Length: 222
Picture 1: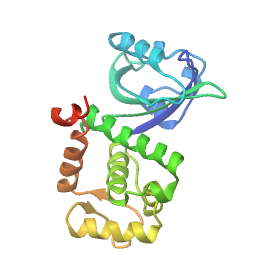
Picture 2: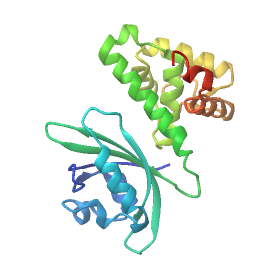
Picture 3: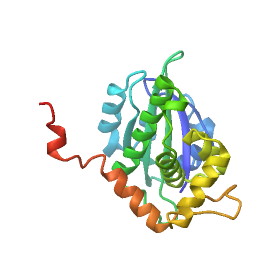
Picture 4: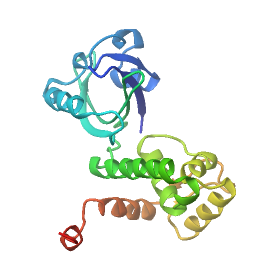
C-alpha cells in the first residue's frame, strides 16, 4: 500500500512533498509546492479539512482524517491522513497512505488506534525513559501493523528500535510470535517481517478494544 509524506504551514500551504506525495497527486513537486491544499482537495471534503486545521495544536495528539484528493484528470483518490503540528518553526507534518491495485485501506479507526497507541508509547518513553516503558510484544505487533498499513518494508533493526529493545531480544520475541502463528518472516528476521492472517485478525481485535471500553470501567470513580 503506497505511503507519502508532506510538510505544510499551519494555514495549509504545502512546503515540501516526497515522491510518494507526487504519486498520490500524480503531479510533480513544482506543481504543488507553495500552493494551498485546497487546490488539491476534493470539494466534498473541504469542510472537514478546514475543521482539522482549526483543532490542531502544537504538542497535542496527532489528528487522523480520511479525505479525497483531486488528480489532474479530474478523478479523486481517497487517502488516510495523519497530521502532527510542530513548532519552531510552526509546521504541519503529514503521513498519508491510499488504495493501490484494489487493496482496501485498513479501517480508519483501527489505524487511528494504532497511531494513538504509538503516540502514547512515545510520550511514555519521553516522560519515564526507555527502561520503564518497554512492552516488547505489544510494541512489536503495533510496529508491524503500522508498517504494513503504510506500505513500508520492515526490518529487524527498525522494529527493535520502536519496541525499545535490542535486536537480539526483538528477534527472540519475533521467533516466539512466529511459532505461535502470529508473525511471518524470513529465516534470519532481517527483513520481510509481516503479520500472519491470524496475527492481523488478533491485532485488529486488540486495536478495536480501544473503542470498546465497558461502561463499568468508564464509570469507576464517578
